[in-house]
Length: 179
Image (cartoon, rainbow, N blue to C red; front, side):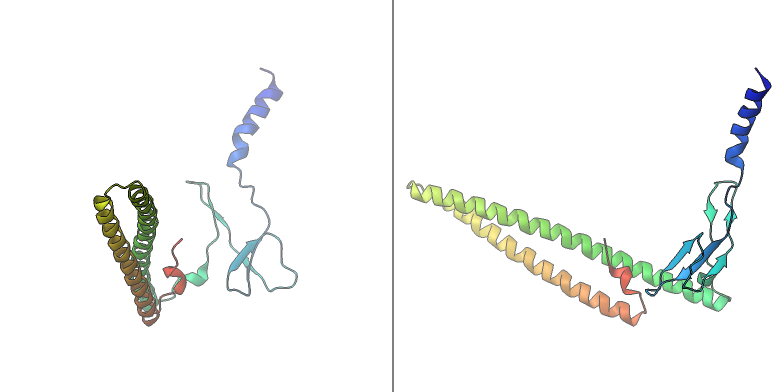
């Protein structure tokens, strides 16, 4: 094997291990409170230079945000407590959201079934047949629909109570928004 191919092969193996992040990373805070990281220094905004570290074990670039770390033990414990409270509210909001979505699907399918039963009953009565069983089933489904709607209203009330309780516990309202 010629030497230039050997040298090229060695370079190909070494190149991925080189740290190619050059330059500085700037951190700016937008009007809405979000932080933006960029390698281009903003012209109109005050920016701080951020330390960039490269970890060898997983090859991820990490930009530490020191503003998020509590300065003392008391602040750390308060943050842990708030995170725990946030998690409880997040789980409750997710549970309510899942129940709400399930009920909405039940309502739609029950309405469709009611429409189907009404069509059958109409056909039976027009043709002179008895439709007692279908009428009974229609009444059962109409009652189920009312129950679903009542449960949906209860969930709405639970969501309002959860939001009120979250405000009392200083929970960020964004935590209660479920995707």
